[in-house]
Length: 345
Image 1 (cartoon, rainbow, N blue to C red):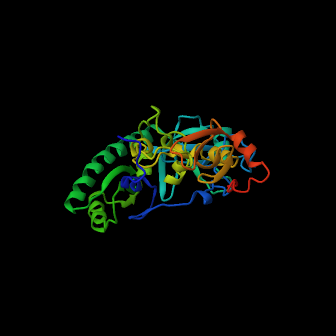
Image 2 (tube, one colour; image 1 turned 135 degrees about the horizontal axis):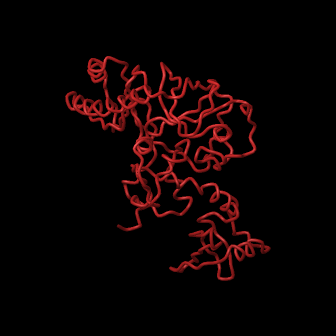
Image 3 (cartoon, one colour; image 1 turned 90 degrees about the vertical axis):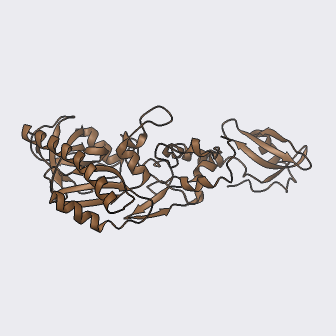
């Protein structure tokens, strides 16, 4: 496959999308307006600041645990049981309605630091109810078996109602007060009849949640092109929007096979070095600006920020010639070089 895909229509399909209920909208944003979650820069593009960052922590006295549920869903809970909890232990915690079952993945100072680094200090937390008993473990195992059978029932019912829905996961709340089906779909779906049908089978509250391709990858997991487990299932606390402007700013080849991640969307790792590119680009002249050198007036066609080289095309010439950033700045500062322009981004 060629690397030259400047007019490739399929690239539009790689743009990130927002999902609200069953509505899918294409996300588009200008690079000049790009900010991180704090609104100041792209350093927090992945949704997390470094653990140990100098941030205020008013929760230092609380015993906080990070609990992970099925399909990489998780949250932070305060332990008021008086029992010391260890990492890896199974616990029963409060849920929106009822109780849920999960495993502790971080406790104590580490959990507090992770919560603080993600800007969650001061947000309300639910409580850890108790350490899981043998009866709780048996109940959780039984729920997992019910989820497997519910997945088959969901597919069967979708076929019955002629609904184009792809199941991404099933979660049965620990106390069986709610059964949640996560699915993806290409358009709006009227699933009211399906919900009634499922409720008649399981006699509990049924929830259907449409998720995006990135959230599906987070739940399913997998390996990235780097050979490691995808970041969204391991350490990323939030999934941020990525669009082609981020790829163009880094002079990446607009090749769908290279830019797409396991989810079929633009790779999240395109954002990881984004702030470095934005900061470094401030020291370079803009693309398509002109500069007068000893060879005449040249048009800047390409910038290599790593090697600090700029490629110029001169008038009446079909070749592109490289020049160092230091040489460009030297010509920029020459008196009378009034035709050099657009050096500030």
